[in-house]
Amino acid sequence: MFSTRHRATAVPPVSWKTMSGFFAEQYPDLEIGIFCSEEGATPAGQLRMGSENGIPVYRLSTPQEVDMDWRPFNETHAEPFERVLDHFQPDIIHFHCIQRLTATIVEVALARKIPYVITLHDAWWISDSQFLIDDDGLLQLPSPDVLADCARSRHGVASIVRRHRLMSLLRHSSANLSVSTSFARVYASAGVTGIKVVENGVPEIQRCVRSGRSDGRVALGLVGGRSPHKGASLIEAGLRHVSYKNLHLTMIDGTLEVGQSIDTIWGTTPVTLSAPYPQAKVTELYRQLDVLLAPSTWPESFGLVTREALESGLWVVASRLGAIGEEVEDGHNGYLIDVNNTKDLKRILKIIDDDPEKYKGYPPSRRKPIRRVNEQVAELHHLYREIVAGA
Image (tube, rainbow, N blue to C red; front, side):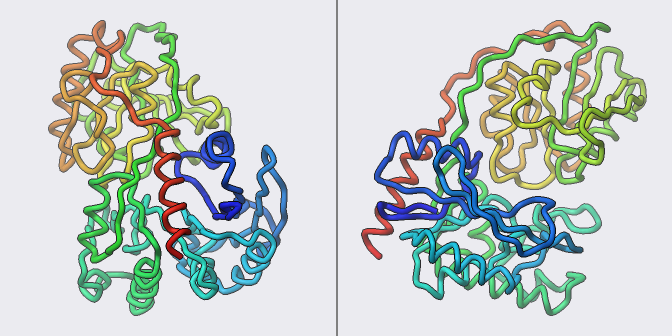
């Protein structure tokens, strides 16, 4: 939340620690407070207050339940959020990634007539499928026709009610912030108005010194996990059906415990399934890779991982769909591929396999600078001030 000595509630897009640090350093006219869910804490409904670098952080334990990332409202969250608002008294609230907290807290802000903005970083607000991939693994883009969109939903009428109620909260927001122009189009196609593009900024990352593989193979990596919308199945199919001589794949698997890994072979390519890396150790992961694979099968709202990889000195192979490949200069520092089938991916893997020395080296430098966090913070600060002044 921030207060503009004055206040607003912020759960920022990149990392609230990173963002709040920039706000505190550059804009002392803002007081910041954070309201967030506390992962894994029990029992549900417990509110506790702490602080990070002098910033108050209010943590609410949320229920672990079936469809917890679909559930749009949880009335039991209203009272603890009311207490937070009474304590912090924000002038403006920025909602971001509230799936576990649910939109009940947005209704509380609306009832109190506190202006708010909403960051649109996935499809939670406009679809039963957070990443627009249905139960059959198919991309389903939303439209303004709610009845048609919800016709196949396993939630039935509840899906229609969910969509209408969430759309109402979007209509009442002071701004709906998309993190990319391409993702703004996805929301606009669903009938959402009041959309403003405020692209995420990326912290500076030093180019890493590659460790290199002892077997001399090109080290490919998929760091987004084995979810279908990240293109994991596409990669597996691409490797199983072609014989490659010079490739190795590391794929992050969220089902593994920290430190665990599994070695296997897909086709002729050795594969390591690895537990997720903490954000603090992401550079360690990138040091082990030569080429990042990001063949997302849904229109990603932003390409943080691809930007991090490019900054770290990796080649990047990314989907043409959505914003994941926006910073990839096709044929220069990586490749953009069609993800409707494996044809394009196989073609690029063959190019890499045929010239391993090239792809074990660094790609050419980017031709344009990457937007930084301080630029994003400056734009948000201006927006908050503008909204509060007009409230």
